[in-house]
Image (cartoon, rainbow, N blue to C red; front, side, top):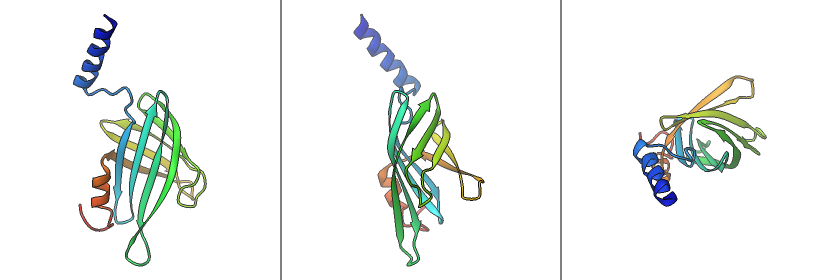
Length: 137
């Protein structure tokens, strides 16, 4: 009986598009020509860990990238993640919300203004296809 209920619950979650760990997966944010970001997250209960890769153009017409580990907490559709370093700014906290497959994250910049980044579900292949900033769509 318990096994049937568990199978039923999994089927209902899948049919309704609900996910017990909605933050698990990969996301891409595209702000070309300034930057392109790839976020890979794994959620376990109310915690989340992952890696953030940010690609930016360098001074030679090429692309450079910074990779930082992230770790944080989730509560429903909200998330708060911290980095140890982020683009040489030191530790940064990003906070946001996941709605309809879009992860909106905010963080303060060096002047105190709030910057927003919108990530959509994406793959490594999508990120790599548009990684040459200013090329692709």
